Image (tube, rainbow, N blue to C red):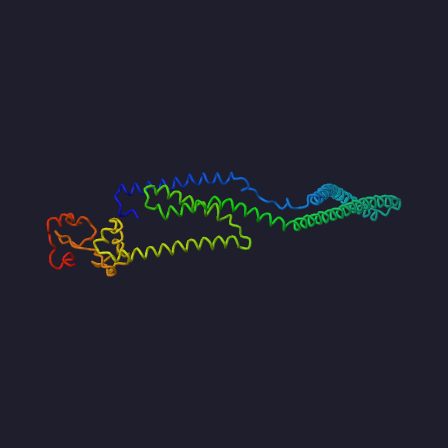
Length: 363
C-alpha cells in the first residue's frame, strides 16, 4: 500500500494511522465511561424479586430452624459416638480380664471363688448394658438427623416450587430489561453507525480523513462490542430482525455502489486514451501496472507480470512504450526513463522520434 509513496509520504501515512488509532482509542474510552454511567444499564433482574416474600420468609425461617437443630443433633451425635466408643473399650477390656480370670479359676478349681465369678459377671453385664445404652442413643440421634435432613430437603423443594411459580414473571421481566438495555445502547450506537457510514461514503478523500477514520473505527468497535453482545436472543426475533435490516441496508449500498462503479467504468472506457490517461492518478497507475493490472479497466494485463503486453487487450490503453533517447522499454506512465533519466516532456520538446518498429512508432 505504501510502496509507491515517497519516504515523507510514508511517514505521514503512518503518522495519520497513529492519529486515527489514538483518536479512536480515546473515543472508545469516553464512550465506555458514558455507557457505564447510564442509569439502568447495569441493573440485573433477580428471581427473588418475584417470589412471594411471605412464603419465602416462612420457608427460610423453617430452614434456619432445621439447620440449627441439625447442628445441635450432630454435636450430640458426636458426643454419643465418643461415649459408645469408651463403653465398648471398657467392656472389651473387662471381658478380656474376665476370660483370663476364668481360665485361672478352671485351672485351680477352688470352689471358694464362685462368688467372684458372679460378681465379675454382673460387672460385665453392667458394662454391656452401658454399651447398649450408648448404642441406642447413637441410633436415636441418627434417626433425628435423618428426619432433619428430610425436612431440609422438603424445604428446598418448597423453595424450588416458589421459584418455579415466579419463573414466568422473572423471564418476562428479564426480557423487558434486556430490551431496555439494548434500546439504550442502540439509541447511542445507531447514530454513530449512520455518521460513520456517511463519512466513509462522502469524506474518504477529505483532508481530515484520518480523524474521520478514527471515528469510523470507534463506531465499528462500539457496534461489535457495545451492541452486538447485548442483542436479545429470545426466539431469535430481535437478533434475526436486526440481521435482516443490516443485511438489507448493506446489500442495497453494495448494489448501488457496484452500479455506480460499472457506469463510471463504462463512461471512462468511452473516453479517448489521452483523457483516460490524464484522469488516472500517477501512483495508482504505477502500482496497478506493477501488479499486473491495467489502470484503465482494472483487468489483468495480457502476458502477466513477467511479459506484459504493450497495450491493454481489453480497453486499448497504452501500458508500455520505448524511451525516445535510449529506446529502453518502460512503463508508459513513468515521467522519466529508468535507463537514461530523460523526461518524457524533454523528448517531446526536442522533437525526438522513435525508431521504426518501436512501441512509440505504433499508434
